[in-house]
Length: 132
Image: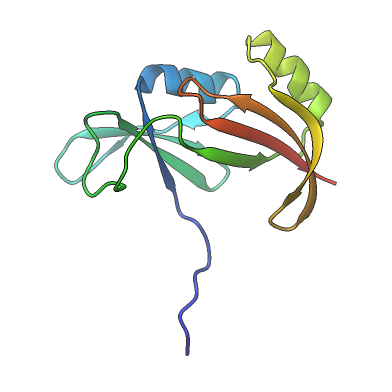
């Protein structure tokens, strides 16, 4: 039998400023800040939404093991929502978040989506999408 994967448990973003990242993802995108304690007793930071988790690494103080070429601003992430994109547009404007492109038609993992594109504090590309 060939082994297969079933889901993505978490991903890691290396960021320049953990507090600014937490503020953006909680205020603009509605994620929850989820600090957690690891085996050595130190506190790490994560963002959660639904059953998904993004661990945060501070640039220059990443946890081992880490990606081969760690850098900020290199991620391109797509998040699904059930909230209409016009409501996202209004919400993001209230938070001073500029929409780079959108709404535009795209193709997601399970079919057609319509997306807005924004940038986080590290200039990672963030896509907010609804299934169409």
